[in-house]
Image (cartoon, rainbow, N blue to C red):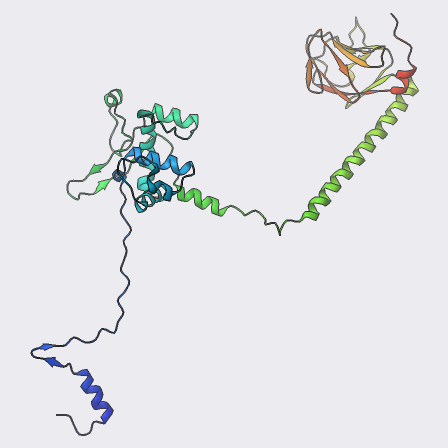
Length: 354
């Protein structure tokens, strides 16, 4: 019985809270809560799920540009048929799963050495090949030592797994003498951290045009300065009657003869161009070379010393000759000289005697 003091709304709420019975069983309350989404567990990928030959074919095909969907349609001769989900799951494990990627890489390298498949692997560096062959592709677990007799009998396992009898857990931690290969996730993160190139809208083409114009202006000024320096040098050489000039860092030599001897002065022998005035001439012969004005107005250098003479970076050995052009850089005994001819004096020079 309900108390008389209860209002109509309170009575309705109390009656709704009392479960109705059918016989001896109570009717279940209506389900007003939506069912939660099912929990999807990540698949557990093991190294032994795929043989080394299938991993090798998958890697070569993907690195050659094949899509995973095309591989799932059966373009590769796998040992067993593979679905697209299996192929995608395996490829992601080879890239991101650290417990699978490194042992799988060792297995594929050893498979390429032993089986020599028709599909040629991608080229690797010589250092990696030498290190892998010298190490026989073998891995050792912590606490174990590799038996020397096993290496002679062809034990070529690249990774070892141990099963604990008590817990049944598999220990796949492998160490080798090779440098550990970083996982793909780290390489991908490094790529993402690289600064992006500017877009087409961000490129300032006016700045590039201005820099090009500034470079052209600087080159024009350099050419004018070179012409001015050459004119001043020619006037100076004409005043002393020289057909050319050898300009060094410390001294200027005037070539007043048709054939000028270059070397170092001694008590018994004198030369026209004494390299002792330029610097340390210990590596210069007493007569190192001759610079001659030929009948056609060109200059040539003839090396008569023991050491070579360098002209614009090219060696002129002993007994050889080379043509000298304007602004040629001559290196004698480690000292550099700039050759500058005097065109006016060359044209006015006497003809070469026969």
